[in-house]
Image (cartoon, rainbow over all chains, first blue to last red; front, top):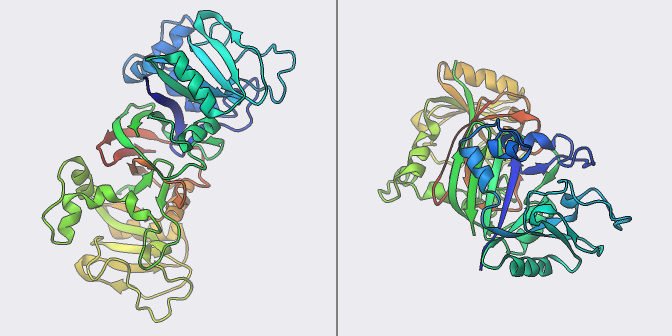
Length: 210
Length: 210
């Protein structure tokens, strides 16, 4: 059976997104600054058909974010800005017709909805019976491959607090943000084993296992 | 002129000490777990006359914590558990007769007190006119060497927020603590340059410059 891992970009003080998420600013106000390391890589730019962009360690880590992942889990706010009922169900995620997941994505929500099949192998499934049920379905879909807890911070914190995460891949952006949504809030007493740590001028890549 | 740097051990979620500091637990409840990497090193154990302890990267970083430092600044809670007036002035720090600073130490306080001279070159000076005055005195004492902002978190945060820190050396312990005193609280919008990042099985050493 694969592992459960989460991959998250955060500021040095643990913020993973800015405040006030909107359709225009899915990462919240200032949240894009966190991900600058990613936007600079060749792998990211190639998704937009652009052959510029840097190679090197950041690019290698960017290429590997989805490596050996057979299913994803995300919170509803990561899927979109719609709150409450799904309404006319025209919201199909932030990522256009061909989202970068290429695997089943289980979205935690209190509001049932039929699965949404996108191009490229991504299907969004809506899970209303909690984090453990979502993980069970994701594991089943992933088979031998791993499950990625994709975010946002509230979802990561729930899985961490429940002791359900095997590996953390943190990309620490070199600034103190001071506001926004924070990982690790309400989580405590979790011991980890450092696996690796490497820095570039854009970001520090930390890997931990439980 | 030397730089202003701070060196701090913290948990992955930014806690630098446990809650409820007492004479028996100067680092607060559970705060010693944070510093386990340090206690394991040969350099630390040699201070107690013990020749056991590990060599390697953690030991090298432990040896270098005081390198080229000509003066230290600390908050009053780091100096001791006494609050308000100094009373009979018998409190002379946590560190015994020969504290590990071996240089002038400027203690931020609202309560004036005569300097306390210890063995080995450490003298505690009590500064009542704020962080900038303390830094000015520390710089003068340090000459060409650097000034270390020793802690605790409240003091670090004040210097960071005022833009007065040139270099951060963070030792990140591999656990999520969930409670205690936190660095970076109330500090925001500070961009840093990653200088280096190395991990051992005990701790991850991060160095940043402004």
